[in-house]
Image (cartoon, rainbow, N blue to C red):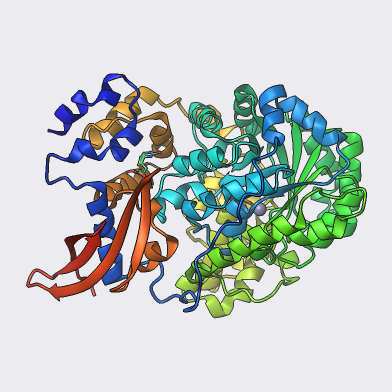
Length: 632
Ligand code: BTN
Ligand code: 3PY
Ligand code: ZN
């Protein structure tokens, strides 16, 4: 029946359909027991209302008196911004313009790193899309809005039951004058492992097409050799390639001479030679101190000659000072998060940087009133995510000991909690530092940071000292991620891996020392597409879905299966998504532009002998009931 409906449908006949068409065209499903989207959404709401959401169980609740977030009204039609410059004149013109500016350019990271670092990456698309028009209208001077990549890609599928590509497409459409920005882990794509070259190329091409303008490309060991495939793909797409060096260690400390000024200048020069339009300086843990920033930025400006975009985290509480020092030294652009999602493991506070530089030659040109109004929106949004707050109470200088990235810190802490190690957190921090030293002092950022974290947790949980781990006479098995990294599968750190620990981990197996991608066969994309389509009952697989599958096969197919049951739950308000509804509650859900469901929960019925509960709704004024298992 479905196939007949599909074959007869006018959109199908004129060949413009995709999987999105099937998902958004209910009349294809009117034949059968297969449920329409409204019923699927009611099923989801009933299930969460009866059983709760597994991710918020036992976690702090949003404040009882919390009010719905209302995005600030757009003050004017969006003025032309960086996006127009990119579209009209291309990537190099944007880079030239950046370098010629006197104002300090600002990237807002709230929609990516801000919530990745404070709320375990759990922010839902609807909360971003609703405020995107306010950004476009009221802050057209922003350099870019970081809203994609990093951990947001898999978390969207895995935990939020939404399509990351759709998020990108929607944000892009609502901010036609601002450049969107993503974080790309070079050959590791948006995953934790090295992908075949053609998968990386296919992913970049799709991201550019769906809506990314600026690609911040980094490698988790700063190995430029392993960044070229991704960088070339970005350059070929016509978008901006921000070739990025990660900052680690302590540049002014002679005992950490591996990462000294010369190291950064040389790596930056290599990135320029590899074709970067802009130099990214990524201080993922927030280790760059103000005096070192002055020296480093000045040297990079003079000796490399690319415009510089600086990223840091405020874990130490010193991030704002480092930004001001970098601004003094001539940095071109910096990353900040909107006030309500800034500070601690997130980026420094956007409004405060705007205020600090107002009436100086580096005045950002941003309207501080507009910043505050948008931040007030985020403040209310944040309340709905109380379950994902880390409980971190203050900045801490301990970050200079452990050097954990801001995006990993709260994550590792909750992993430690789930292993019963929360009250030994400071030991985990010390072990993390010890592991770094054992591994030869490496850059720690996804995925290398995850490897260090895995090893640190193992040491604390098994009460192992660094001497135990390095002792060649003491046999032990290492976490898979450690073995994989020592095999060379994340690439090479400067100077290679320390021989003794590598030998111990690999137990005689020979590592690779060239690019991991050189050992991976290209994937036959059409063959994978056909197999996936078959696995999904003949569903048409477009390039976005195929890319999702290539990055995360299981995560993607699990998502698709749940999508069959629950429908477009991305359109639910965040409160209802995580907590369901109470009898008497009423919500509006726009499942398509102009197509709104008015949903009211009437009552929860009895649980029957099969353990199922009947849940009574009113849907657009009509009574509807659905049955869901009562698992309580
Ligand atoms: C809807 O809102 O109706 C659809 C939301 C779910 C996204 C589907 S699932 C796979 C496919 N890929 C997309 O980008 N969107 C659809
Ligand atoms: C990521 O790769 O997700 C990061 O945020 C690294 O800092
Ligand atoms: Zn970051």
